[in-house]
Amino acid sequence: MIKKNTNSDALIATILSGIEDVKGHEIVLLDLRDLENTVCDYFIICEGSSNTQVNAIVGAVGKKVSKELRDKPWHIEGEDNGEWVLMDYVNVVVHVFQKQIREYYDIEGLWGDAKTTKIETNY
Image (tube, rainbow, N blue to C red):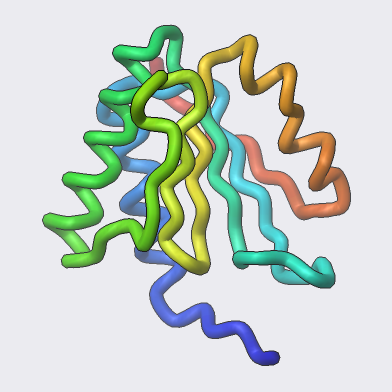
């Protein structure tokens, strides 16, 4: 199966911008394209300091992607509790965690073979 990567760069940049708009912390991009049996090409992982901030990050990403790229997530999970929200844009999956939940599930550790890029923020 050949994976399409048509608009992934624009989508990633827009998602990162949405996260930064509401000061998401510890942003990491995992490139999964060279791994076998992956469900998508990229994971973007970040954290918020509370369920309110987690939900604000999800809202900011959704609005920015909708406005700039006229795209919306195929699926969203976890909005009810605001501890771990997953936004599935098919080729790019966004994980927005609260710190303790992120540490518990350790997505970066589970996907340790992926190319990891830490996104520097100015705040």
